[in-house]
Length: 315
Image (cartoon, rainbow, N blue to C red; front, side, top):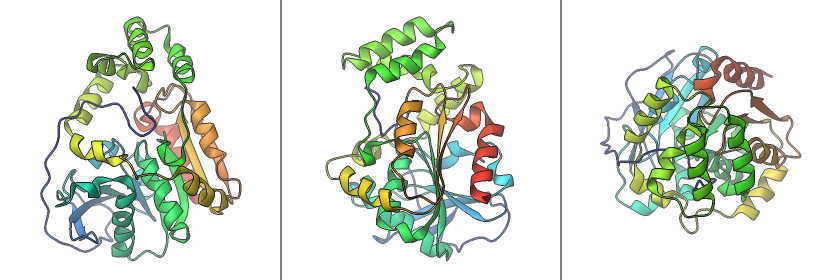
């Protein structure tokens, strides 16, 4: 079953080893990962690219190597992107305690990175499953979040469910595609919890605006870059308290942007709309729907995503 906290991906585990320690970079770009220590001593890595004010970017998956975010379609021309490799992924070390992969426990990793960077507040972007982490961080440290951007957000942390009918309605927008028939049949089986691993793979086209060779290559690479053991812990029992999180977000007064793809069956537009409505006291709160885009909008409409996010951050 497709869930509110995950993005589609084949999932062999990736290994990670700590890099040498270093300090925050003030340069416009950095190809080598930089590192800092989490509160439990785990060495964590982050990657810096672009120029301008920093934007802290949390990758989805959950537990996808942050490399898949790239430069977010060219957003690095407007902002200095700081991509965190979550523990156990990319260049970050594998923690001694596997329970530390749980989403609520990762909040302190994000806070440690903020402190390491010497920032009083952060502009924070969470994609897919890491929108849950961004929401929990905002709920625990609302005074530290200057602006919040949620792209194709996972919704488990705030308790928003997406019905099977809403997913299927979004999928039917693709009914003219050559691959639609088998993919839709697989989605129907998954919607009744009778699907197989093959069905999970079969619905992958519903998460891309265009199912072409570039999308297939991107999907295959994503599968190789995910830590499936960590992902199994991410949303485990105790990770979320939706009522408490929503109560804090309802009082959050700083700007919030939710970005959705028109064709995204993982976070359909009605779900993204409901998420944007959780911030009634935000200084600015908005929803941008990118026409023809899927769950990875920087691949489908890079210009639209960059324009929307850059304008929001500069507003």
